[in-house]
Image (cartoon, rainbow, N blue to C red; front, top):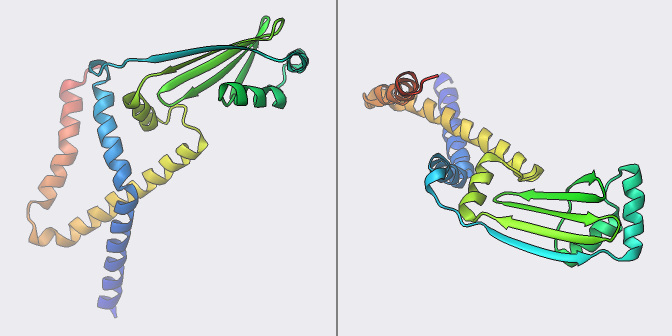
Length: 202
């Protein structure tokens, strides 16, 4: 009975190990690559592409915008819809400033914003794209990625922890026949500690 229970739990460990590895595989590769690009960000040249556009908000929408400005409210839905259809942008944060409204739309690897003059309805839109490397780096950091990506990062982190813990248990299972197992694990722990103590100074 004891042997069958033990075999059951080791089977569970193996199942959780391969399932968690499958879930976290692509994420681990992506985060390993972007770990390198982040460490060498200063050596990787980026060529930002800046796009500028101008438009004029219709008169009726200007009135609703001024009414919202008086109350420091969110961007009126008709105005947001017009900006979406005319400029292809999805307004996010809104800041009411002197004589204008500033709408920020930051994203991974990009920075987009626009202003609307309250007196004339003049719209100035500017978008800066910093390329795919910057995009992937921002995904790594969870910068301006939204709630869905933050949840993905949490799920990925949990899957990675399960993968590592079950891997450690499997190492314990096979350690008797593989004498270098624990020295290798020790190296993985001691090496970063030595680098921190010796080379990283406060």
